[in-house]
Image (cartoon, rainbow, N blue to C red; front, top):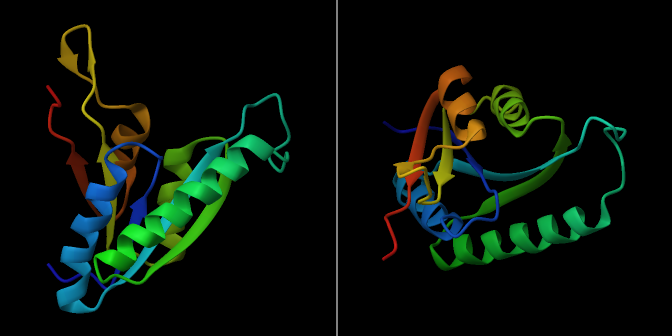
Length: 142
């Protein structure tokens, strides 16, 4: 598999640096374009273009950190921050608009009721994306 464009969804989890390094290892041999996005989910009781200062500041820090990790891995990472009602829909729409061949999502290791938990965003992207999806699940930290 040699994707031309890779979209990496960044949520600010502990798995993000691992995912960026993984994307670098996939992108570099084929000189793929890598696009990192962070989606701010806006509650339904607010306008979609609401100014959410804390979330915007956190998103900027997250994307700046992602660029630094990518740079250290030898990857040029274009970044974008979006606001949407649902992160999965924004990720899929961006992948379609940018004609991405691959979406990479991170799943930090979490358990709920004794079982590994996969969040709704990862699940919805995995099920509904029209292109290949790679879900990286972080190892259990003991």
